[in-house]
Amino acid sequence: MQIAKLLLIYIVSCIQISCAFSICLFQVFKQVSEMEQIKSTVVQNLHAIEELNENDVELSPQINLKEPDLDDPILKWAERNIAEDPNNKIELIEELKDMIFERGECEPHRMDDAFLLRFLRARHFIVRMAHRLMVNYYTFRETNPTYFSNIDYSKLLELGEAEIFTVPPYVDQNGRRLLYFRIENWNTSQFTPDELFQAIIFLINAAILEPKHQILGGICIIDVNNLGAGHAWYLTPKIAKSMVAVGYSSLPHRIEAVHIVNGSKLFDYAFGLLKPLLPEYVRQKIIIHSDLDSLHKWVLPKYLPKRYGGIHKDYRYNEWLSTVSNNEDLLEEIESYGYTGGKDFLKSL
Image (cartoon, rainbow, N blue to C red; front, side):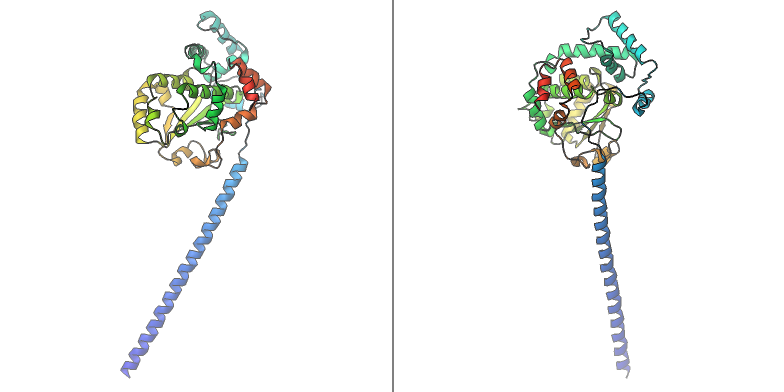
């Protein structure tokens, strides 16, 4: 009798344990199923958000050479951030003209208001600094004629196809033009540093023809992934000097920030050698990112290509140039910068 009672208790316990196990197993499968559903929903939502963002970003490669209307919000921004006051703008342009004639440190090929205004905007309407920029500009042109003359436009096209430089047909969240430089695509046996400078100066000169970008400035993202010894070999004092001139001291534009991504030990070493050659105001503009999350704090993913955690495809700058090549005013401006044959080159794209 005692044995039968114990056996009954054992059987009941086994049933209870089995039921408890089944309930736990059911709960686990239920949670897994719910997690899968949640995961599926999240993925769908992410795709939906991504699609929405991509459609929401305006692709506007057309360059507008007209000055903003007086009621355009960008002029309010300009007044707050670069001291552009419509009430004294003409007066400051005249003051810059007088300074050019009085000091005689350069002989501009143009003296029209639109041309001088680019220098004033690049230097926050401080006339003496705008004048110094203009002197630097013409000195740089004279001492580096290969950057501006006898341009092999077929090489510019090859550089575009190689995707060393990229100019997307959209701007960042602040309305600034973006320029990408992917160093791993630079075959040093195919393209010389001079040809790279020719291309980037040409692109900058095309971009700054638009008043909106004279006001807002631009952003450069340098991808140093797969930086090799062959690339590092060119980080000489002469190249550093040209980089500073092109980026900051000798062209009438403003690069608001230089973002460097995909660094390496070789880059750290090479930049360590280059850094002392850079002025302090240039160093302050350079931001080295340890990961893409860091970059996204400055440029939202909505305005980046997929390779940098964004939503866009990669664009060649040839696509951008071919889109804007129908702007006759732009073509005339390119020629006025001394790019003989530039008009025919752009029309051929």
